[in-house]
Length: 195
Image 1: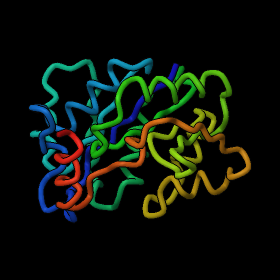
Image 2: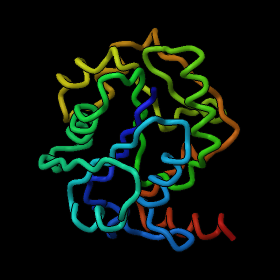
Image 3: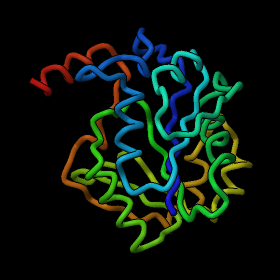
């Protein structure tokens, strides 16, 4: 079973707006990301909230996701990853780490990445588009302890660098794995793309 951890705890300071609640085609980013994960082949979806947690929870409504709050979200994404991974079911074989500012990653792309993980079961799986590394990545559950003890300021890089030789890459035919929204100009590019 693959568990998904959707990171939705940050403050979006560079964007100037709260990304999780920005909308795309009438749905917030966090709703779209959660829906795509729920529709995929993952066995459970855990959403990690932090900043404006009550609003994110309200946006998600009664979706079949587990919501966990990270009180230390200001220390960085690493603390949210730890919080999410702690909440993953004990029988999960892999943990997919997804970002709430990547609403363009469709269920089909997620399923392609999951199928590759199911087939190869590497320690770390990273999708690429034209050779560029993207998200979401999948970590083997054997790395749980390393994730739990990683420095939250360094984050997952600490874990993936330690297992560089064990990283498996899957090339996908969709650039959505590279597209996240950090700056206001990224939104303008999105509206041009959707037209």
